Amino acid sequence: FKCESLGLTCVGKDVTRVKLGGQAEALGVEVGWKIDMVDGKFVTPQSVIPAIRAAITSKKQPPSSSSSSAKNTNDQKKNESNILTQNTPPTFVIKFLRTVHVPISPTVIRSTPSWPSVEGGTSRE
Image (tube, rainbow, N blue to C red; front, side):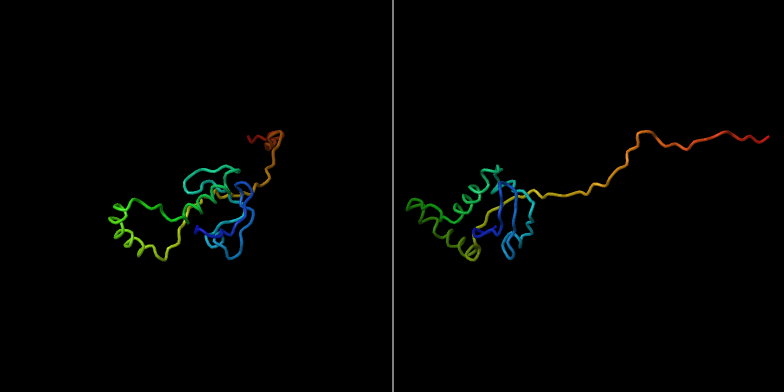
C-alpha cells in the first residue's frame, strides 16, 4: 500500500468495506478478508488501526539526520538513491487472510442401513 488513503474500512481485523477506485480495490482486497500482519508484525483486533497509522507515519517521516562528517560522505549515495526513488512513494505491507466459503451440501443419514432384501429363495435343479 502507498502511504495515503487505503480505501478500506475495517472493524477489528475484518475488512467491512472496500471503496470503489481505492487502493484496496485496485489490489484486489475483498470484504470479509481479515488483516493478519502490518509491515511484518502480527496484529490483534485492537492493534490494527494503530499499526497501520504507525506504518504510514514512519514511512512518511524523512530519515533522521546524521553527524556532519557522515552526512558529507553519504551525500553522494543519497543523491544516487534519490534519483532511483524520486518518483516512488513510500509503501508498506498489509497481509490479509482470505475467507473462503465452502458450500455444504445436505447429507442424508439413515439410522439403519438399507440393504436389498432377499425374500425366499429359488432353486433350480
